[in-house]
Image 1: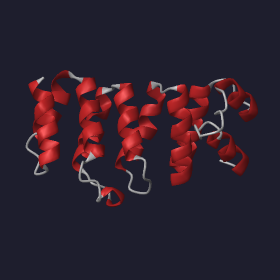
Image 2 (image 1 turned 180 degrees about the vertical axis):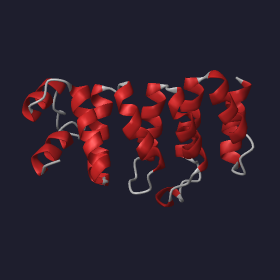
Image 3 (image 1 turned 45 degrees about the vertical axis):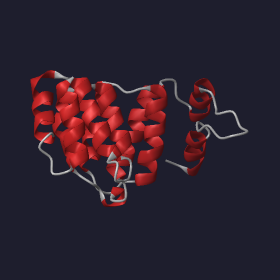
Image 4 (image 1 turned 30 degrees about the vertical axis):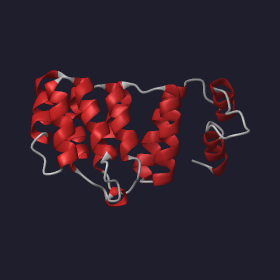
Length: 166
């Protein structure tokens, strides 16, 4: 993304004392007509360049305009990548898509503690991944939850077991 494009994405953020830019204004200034397609293009580009800042900004656009099944592949790539810090957003996005193709990635996110999240005793990434698995449903997702219920992490195990009981 160019510095101008980054500034436009930043204008979507809610900041006290300032109204965020509307979707229509954003698309017009960006020179785009389809926010979902734009988010996908930005996400693919950021993943291809392994740019963690642009991944974050592309995800802002994606959450603002929505995800399609075309977003699945770059999100799956990001789930296993250790060069960015937006894994919780990735888990949430995969949860929105509810694709059975993301079960392995979500199980990975529930087990893995990236170095930048070692401080998080609440294991928010794991909890988001577990909730996403619940949203997918089906036997394969249930199998992943059953495996997570045996996790050495009490938080992961308890959250997975609680979801299995529901």
